Image: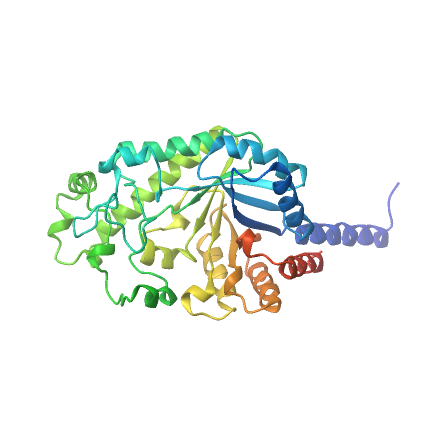
Length: 359
């Protein structure tokens, strides 16, 4: 039977409307949270219920790279309707009992001081070298152990970079620092393995450079070292039918400048840029700006962006709603909040209401 043109038009409009509605409802909401093995299953169930009832769809859980604890938590979270990502501190490995047995694994500053016993900024900055075979294989082994855990969505890399050559501007007074130029005590990694690998490619020693801050080969060598770890982690995650995601600096050019991280070049499924506007003395509209920049840089790639929002940096729930909408309007597929402990009942109410308004 041939349908009238008007009926066909109505059907087309209905299908299009449903598709648009479905598109709107796919915008996801996540939260970073750190696990404590001492907490009971009942306490975790209550926490996960709180997130779910507040509009949260996924939890990115830091178990300090403990696959057994993660295995315990995954069914508790999924029972409450939450997706789980295994959050790992990758190149920065504070308190890593295996790595601490190998002082040679740690990154070395331009001053010649190792993160093993001379840590930049804070005591938990214990960075492993991404070039040295043993240290990078250690990190990738940890990635694989998490990837094996049944029920997770992704292995979620954090600190997948070098130490901050430049701190966010609002943090400088805390350390009584002025960083107008690259300072040698914060410039990494100049260990023997990095120098040897660089010399093999470029036939020169970076330590002899007149000005390493404008030596593009040396900078690119370090960008590539991190990219190589990510690309290997991607292969490992996908081997176990998991995705690879990462918490990254706000947008690629900024990440490149501040922490030797060029995430638009990586093999990775989704990134969660930490667009913490208060760290940079920026206003709330910067959330939209930085999101848009990252989306533009990924234009020809399949990688998706989830905008990271720093809850303590928001003045009120009005700004929380604005940040969510700015992220969505500028091309993010979701938002994630740092962190679970900072979310108030009022925040969760705002998140839920904002989520409902997108349907």
